[in-house]
Structure formats: structure tokens, C-alpha cells
Amino acid sequence: MTLYTEYTAAGVRTAADHIQLAEAYGAANYAPLPVVIAEAEGSWVTDVAGHRYLDCLSAYSAVNFGHGNPRILAAARAQLDRVTLTSRAFHHDQFGPFCAELAELVGKQMVLPMNTGAEAVETGIKVARKWGYRVKGVPAGMANIVVADHNFHGRTTTVISFSDDPDARADFGPYTPGFRQVPFGDAAALAAAVDDNTVAVLLEPVQGEAGVILPPPGYLARVRELCTERNVLFIADEVQAGLARTGRTLACEHFGVVPDMYLLGKALGGGVVPVSAVVADADVLGVLRPGQHGSTFGGNPLACAVGRAVVGLLATGEYQERARVLGEQLRAGLDSLVGHGVTEVRSLGLWAGLDIDPALGTGRAVCERLLAHGVLAKDTHGQTLRLGPPLVIEPAELDLALDALRASLGDLAAG
Image (cartoon, rainbow, N blue to C red; front, side, top):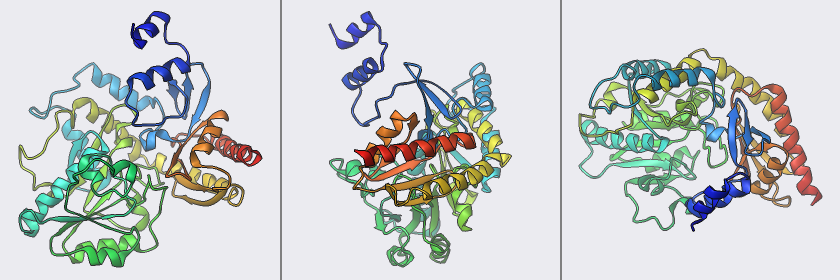
């Protein structure tokens, strides 16, 4: 009798049952906290035993508008009753409006919808190379793209080829050539890396997985200048940072720069379906011709209907303003913890990275204590804790999260 047959006969009921089943049959590519979520609404999730937790991760910004956002769910339900998939072999009545509305929101001319953030990055790379050969005149097979150290753009084979995270990269070679890494924030190093065959500079305006690392003053403006001077595309990966998380529609707006291409994802699907997009002007995205790139599910009717609802929410500016105001509250609370188990805080809008004093414990240890206090968060790179609650969180709930963090640090200090 298999383990699953035993569970089917007895009934999978407890969190331990679910975790054992997941560990027996699921590949171990994640190390989740020991909580099994069964329901969610707004900023809260509920486990199989009925315990509620305040979500301070938002699925890495995919749930910016809260779990079960009524407008997004209504759009999804309406579309489910009509048509969900046609493939791009045919037109459907949600595709054109979605592309037009997203292009207007972002201030570009063309949209290429895909599914995941990693797909958007891969698409951006392909478009940049095609542009380099067809428009810039780079010799065939010679295109290079400049990227930043400590980047995170996904985990596909091409993307991990220019990652310096050993967990993401080790044992997955041979690696895709054509990328040059430079330190994030070092404009001089970037300038030195750009040559006549450089087709793009690919950056996260704020590095999320690295721990919410903000660029130094003037850096992105200098990147924009260099790209313009050297006829190179500036590609901004806003998959995590974009769509109101930082207090603006796009993180690049904080730094006064407009890249040639935006890569969007996560929040674009409203926490309902995977939706991503490459957004650029016609002189860039227009290099593609039929058959040169595609996706069966990319730009499907359900995804476009959900994406349109998300764009509609963003068009009001309400969520950007919530992230800005609540971000100030979050930052004030986190700053009060510096010297009390926290060594450094970095934040922009409702998104923060805080470094935990190694003498106290690891970021994972803090997350485990937060779980015990009813708050869900995620660590990264050992000592760093990331906080990014849904933008619908209420001020009192944010205070609750800060109190839980303070208590969790106290627990670790007390041993």
C-alpha cells in the first residue's frame, strides 16, 4: 500500500499529514515553513486547523492587492464562464484591450504578454538580441548583455547562467554565454563593461531577492545616460518591484528614469493566474515577426481579463498611495529595532529588507518565531528578512506585524 493510499483511506486532516505527503511526493526545491494554508482573504491566511496568520510576504509581491480581491475575482469568474484559452492562433476579445490598457498605464507602445516573470525575462533577452542584430548591427552571435551582481531574474537555464547565487547556479551547467556581470551600483564598472556588441543592460531597479537593495543616488540616471550614449537598451526587471509595491506604479519612477523595456509579472496576475508582460515601444518590440516567439498560454483570455482588472486597480493610484503611506509606518517601526536584534534596514514603499544580528540568529530563525506569533515572512541569504505585506493591509495590522517581529527578536535574545 502506498503512502497516498493510506492517507486516502484515513483522510488527510492535520498539518503534519499534509506536510508528510508533500515531502513524500513533492520535489524538495523549497523549504517551506511548517504551515499548511487552506483559505485566505485580504491580508490573512488560515491553516487547515483554523489558525489565522498575517501574510507579510504576499507571494513575493504576486498578491499585492490582497488574497481574493473582489474586483479581480469578479473579472476571473466572468471570464471563466465565457472562454479561457484560444491560443494565439486566433484573436480573442480580451487581448487587445489588455495590451492597450497596460501600455497606457506604463507609457509604452506595445505589450507582449507571457505567463511567468522568468518567461518575461527570457523574452526580454531574446528581443534585445534580435534588436541588436537587426537594428544596432551587432555581428551575428556576438551580442552581450550587462547584468548586476546579486541579481535575481528567475531560475531558467539562461537566467541562472548569469546568477552568482550558488544554490541557483551550481550543477546546472553548461551555462549560456553572452552576459557580463558588474557590481550593482557601480556606474563606472558598468560603463567599462559596455562595448560595441552590447545590446542591453538588464537590472532590477531595486534588488528584491538580494534583500531589498536600493541603488545609490544617481546610479540609475547614469545607467540611462550610458545606454542612450552607447545605443544600448535599458531593461528594467520590475517583476517584484513594480505595480505599486514601492509606492509608485513602477520603481523606476522613484529614480526619474524611463527604461527602454519593462519586464512585469507577479502582481499582474492578481494572485489568481500567472501573468507577465514585456512592455516597450514599437522600435524595440516591433523587431519580432510571427513564429519567432510565442506561448500557448501567454495572453490567454482568462489572464488578460485578470490583467485588465489589475490595471484598473492601478489606474486609480489608490494602491500606490497606500504603499507610500504604510511604507512610512513600516520603516518607522523597523528603524526602532536597529540595535535590538536588527543591524540594518532598507525599504521603499511597503517593501523592506532587514538584516538580523548574527549573534541573535538567522533570518529563518526569526521567520519561525514570527510563525509562532501569527505572522508569515520569508528570509533570504541567511541573515536577511524580507517584509512585503499585501497593499490592502490596515495600519493596525501593520502594527500587529511589527509587534510580532519585536516579540520574535525578544524570544531569540532570551534564548
